[in-house]
Structure formats: structure tokens, C-alpha cells
Image (cartoon, rainbow, N blue to C red; front, side):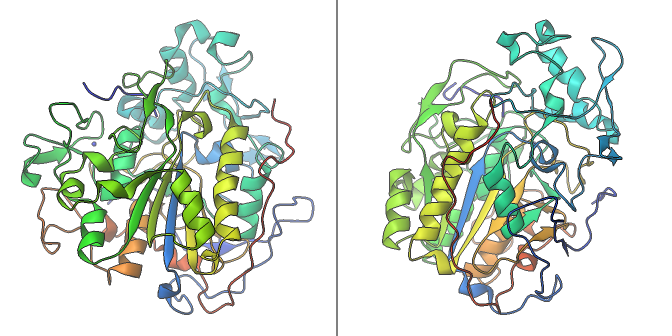
Length: 473
């Protein structure tokens, strides 16, 4: 996501939107402990979704699917010929083109990733604007990419990692479920993505007290200011959760936060706190959260670890990092992996593990290369592919989900589990707003229930080292 100062937007492409498949990586590719799944086919899940009493959405930052899983066995990954990338992205600054390449860089530059950059990167379906956009954003970085620009060598938007750099992520992918067609909900940066994550929409409102005054905006949606601390007038999921007495919490790691202008890639970070609305902490900016007396449900991260240990996790949790552990360039990949591992280990070690579903994803592509053309569901998206996993004692084992998914699928799962299938729908939710559609009902959107076998006995936890050995440098 580009940083932004606080205070001051169905035609499905041919990209594998069919049912998921299970794969067993070959012995030469030791991915987790994956085995072929014997669970029911997608669309015929076994058992009862209500065995899940706790849904946790962990949202990291700024990685495309191909950056982390482009060479994972069985996925719709980087096009290869005899083990060598066959795709080559034009390099207008230097001539020729740049192929995807393996990297061990712990800190990367990435590329600009606002709405304009998404259009350039997608390039009307050619998926070949990534290098040009990075060079345009940092002219001095063309050709050599000086150390001040994130390291020497080829443009790092074309770099990818594998099990050697991110062993825990690859282990969870092999032990549980990896989705290879998870698209960010909007073709833009983090603030819209985080708004979609909790509300199914990103908009700007002419009147902060009137939900019908809002119009779609995935570029620069409203930001809280001292004069207007609640700019988000439309309805978010917590309104329905509160009305139906379903517990929820939004856990924020307090610390460094984004505060650069849209399309900027790096700048001096500001600070984020649970009490103040910000780019990665949107819920305090929603009028309904304040009106419902739920602002206290946005809490610092230590509350998450306490709840996981004590077995008092709410029904619905969102977990958001600070800049240091976000994996948002130039933050260290190793720091992010360690942080995420600490979260998942805490849940696995606690009494709520046997009834929990963890959805792990990254909020936008961060300017990094991806080969799959995003499908279009409406004027707001979808955006580019991001990594996503489902981790649960009821998750299928070694399963790759090829369904077309977006963060709307998280809302859909939560609504089906805890709200009897009720949607954030102006026609039925009791709080009408002017959203153009009900994203959870999009015909292209898959169903995360297909990633579970609720008939199986709950699988025991497998704790991973928070500081695994890697070759990151």
C-alpha cells in the first residue's frame, strides 16, 4: 500500500475460477507435510460450518501471489518452460525485458500500487507494466537500482521467493489450504482494501451522517480528520454483529504506520494507535461503530495474545500489523513471517484452536509482478492477486483452492456462520446505504466452505518456530 497521511474505488477472465483441487507435492518439493485430500468435493462440504466458533482474519501487506507462491507445486503460478520463467516484462528504461527471478532479499522496494498503477501493471490484460511503473516512480532507480532504492540488480518487482525464504508460509500452505485465485477486493491500495475487508465497500461520503450520500471511491476515500473523525457513513459488518449479539474485536499492533501520499512508496512513518482511525485501522472512522458504543472493541495487540491464551477469543477477529512487521516494503519479510507465526502459534496453543478458522492474506499486490488477469465484478474491482491461506483444525490438508475469491468471501463466511446468511445489504440489513451492489452475492465469488471438511476430527496444532532458519539476507 502506498502510505497516506491521516488528518488531512461480471466479466470473469480466463484465470482458473473453477473448483479447487487437492495436490500432493512431490518428495523433491518438501512443502509442509501435504498429502492428497480425501475430503468432499467443493460445493459438498461435510459437516457443519457452525463448528467454527472463532474466525480470525490476519491481514498482512503488499505482496502479490507470484511473489510468494509463484513456484509452489500445483498452483496457477509463474509461467515456466523447463523450470525457467517464460514470461519477460518490458523494461522501457533500459530496453529489453526482465524475467521473474529468485531473490533472498529480506527488504525490498516494491512498486507504486494505487489505482493508476494497478491499471498500468494490468495493462489491459497483458500483465506487463510492473517494471515500467517501478522505474516511473523512482527514475533514479532505473538500470542499477542503487542501495537507496532497495538494492542493486534487476527491478525487484520481478523477484519471487520460495520455501527457502518463507518456510513457515510454505509449510502452512502444505499442511492446510492455499488459495491461488484470491484477489484484493479493489484495484488499488491499502485503505480501500481495509475498508472492503470490514464493510464490503470503499467510498467517500458527502455527509458523514448520511449513508445514502456515499459514492464508490477506491483512490482516496474519506480519511478521518479532527473536524470529521467519522467519515465512513455506510454500514460495516460490525453493525450486524452487534445487532445479533455476535462478539468481535479488531486487534491492532500499535507502532509505525503509513503516512505518505498516494502512490508514494516510502517515507518517514507516523504512528498508529487502537483509539485513532487510520489507514490500517478504519473501524474507528465508521459512524455506526461509534453509535453502537463499540469503539472499545478496537484493541491493542496484547489483548489478542491474552484472549488466545485464555480461550476468550471473540467470534470474529481482525488482526492488523504495524509497519515493522507488516511486510510492506521496505519492512523485513523475516519480521513479518515471525510475527504471523507468533499469532498462529498463540491460537494453536490456546483452548480455542479446535473451533477456529484463520484466514491469512495480504492486502494488496504492492507493485510486485503477478501473471493472472484480475476478473471484473463491478467498477471497484477485483484487484490483483494476493497470497491467501486457510488454517484450521477442519481445513483440508494439502489443498489448493482455485475458486475466484476476494476479501468479500471472508464477510460471506462470517455472515453464513454467525448471522444465518444475512448480508450487508441495503434492502435487508435495516441500515440502508448507497453501495452499488452486495459483493458477497457476486456470481463469480467462490465459497470458503469448500476449504473445510467439517466431518473430520479436529486436527491437532503444529507449532512452528517463530524465527525459522531461512536464506534471507
